[in-house]
Image (cartoon, rainbow, N blue to C red; front, side, top):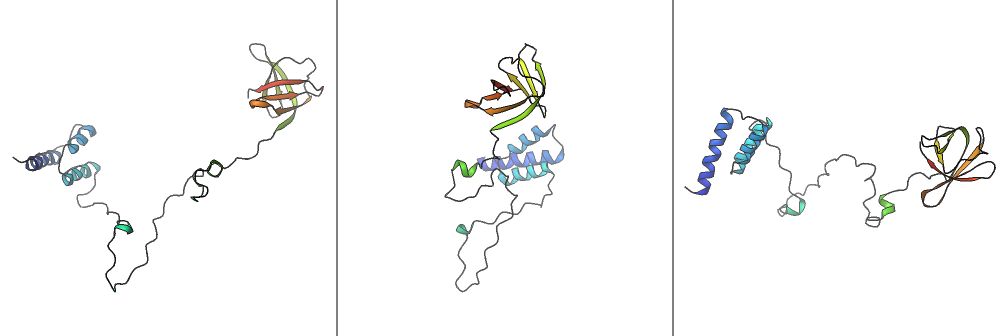
Length: 185
């Protein structure tokens, strides 16, 4: 027997078995369809598994304009069809597709809102962590860990927190004392 004849016989047998009974599960059904050598019969098997009616094949997409045959001489040329509508791109990928900005980090990743450089607020609570390190709670509920205790700092004092170097923060008290702080909450 030739290879194509043998493959056709196997495909026909599998198609008959598939239509006469259901397989044990989806994995076995997919494996049975995958074993079919003939592409049309294999597709028909997958269509049956998907519950698609036998004659309902999806329409093939039109070939690109570069692959279409040129119109015959004297034939009317239709206007090109509008491209199909697609889903709106996400905010992050909404950067212009301009060749001048392609690959530019600042064009593809626009800057966020400006970040304040200082924060001035009143102390609402002084406390300590479980291991005894001093903490300061400010208006709005922000909790900051101090590098060391400050005996002059009191509830109701106004403090200013500013950005330091390398992502650090500095807290300046009303008495002009300076502390390295870290935000906990």
